[in-house]
Length: 130
Image (tube, rainbow, N blue to C red):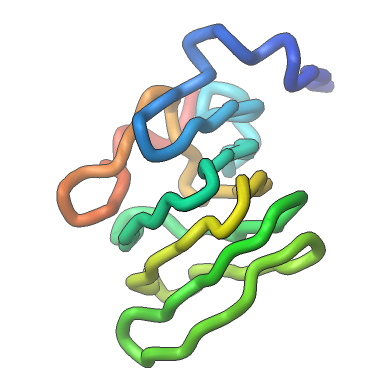
C-alpha cells in the first residue's frame, strides 16, 4: 500500500515547478501502478498549448476556473470544479486559467519524475516502470 500526503511531497524532487505551472507528483512510474498521479496548479491568467504525443491524460478540476480549447475542432469547454476532461486521442489543446486552477491529473504511461513540456507541448516518454 502507498500512502502519501500532498504536504509531504511539496519541496521534494517530486515537486516540479516551471514559470507556467507547478506539479506535485504523488505517484510515478517507480511506484509500479501503471499510471502517474499529479496535483497541478496553473496561476491565474496563464495559458498553455499542450499536445501529449506520448501519453494519455485525464484531468479533474478541483478548484478554480478556466477554459479548454480543442485546437483541431475549435470546440471550447468551461473548466470549473467538478469538470473532467480526458485527452484520449493525444488531443492538441490549449488551457487558460481565469483564476488559479488546481487540477488532479493522471498520465498513462506514467511519468518518471522531472519531465517538463518540450517545444511541442508534450512530455518525453522516459520509461514505464520501476
